[in-house]
Image (cartoon, rainbow, N blue to C red; front, top):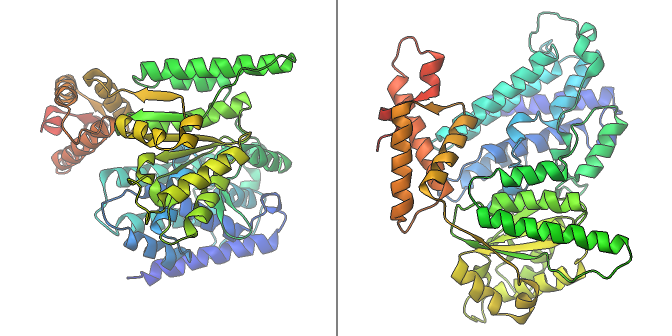
Length: 489
């Protein structure tokens, strides 16, 4: 059911964006977007960031997007958008692009909202209101609530930083921050193309646009920084060594090319094999950035799909759907999870083989600027690669992801807790270590490695909330600390 009060507020905010654009069309001209388009896109990114699958078909969430943003998507389109455009590790710390431009408008003395408040204040409010309504569709999870709260806090801090939070007649023209207004981390932004098809904006193009607007950018991570990030991941010793060897080979190959020497033939397409939750997607996302830094690919984006993102239900549709996905990955890495599901025992009625055939052709056509990683269980991936000579010739480099040990899961748990500003006391910390060690050793059928630690942490946070909610004077220490009662199960 539509909340028409919220709907009217969303529409009113879109109208404000039109007013900004009409009063100063040059404000966003370098982006190729109007203020309305930018707000709509950033709100969709925010919803994708908040979304946590609850096992339903996603129909309520898709209806919400249609009703409030006027965007119609299938569940596969939405999930591809979420994992391709909303999961950057710095998303929760990066102001949306539309807020940067509305703040610039406010600080240059632009027209105010009908309420008399800065336009950027209205933008922040609509993010909070829409996010609150979105997570309330189904039973919200602790993660959804935490993400919404932390994102809202980041938006408020941004407004405070530039004197836009308090609306008591402060002159923004006199704000000393105005002279050095910065646009942070814009290279993680995404934009839709003219046809409305969502596609990742390249860091290089976005950087060029931002520079033309006179806005400072944080520099892209260097190869050294990216390698340090890889090496600080918990566990994955053999993965790190295999990838370091491969990266060193790429460096030497490039050096030989520069000196006019023959280059050794190497394949950069990879098979990531291992159980769920062992870091395959995380490493793939990092590897895309490393490949860009090395000049192997031009853009460095990661496009993640599974069978449902490639295979359609009718003859001829699968080829075009696969081609569209591959097109979006050119310049970066296409990551196909559970790739073995594309082959279903030679069933002539199955269109998975059509996806494989199309993929192989497009890999060849775009071999200079496309890397493909296929991932899944070890035995099933070997069977998949060996099922087709074309696959076997292109995917001959395997990277094996071992299950995490108990001590590694404990580190992952503590890292996740720290990011959300939680800490265990000594007794609880000992319990967590013993609990996760037992889980790792037992290795039950549904053991999910890092996801096991994440799900356990969510349950601990839920128990802590129930324990402290009735305390009359809750201290910061109470809010931060997980005790033995919270972690015991």
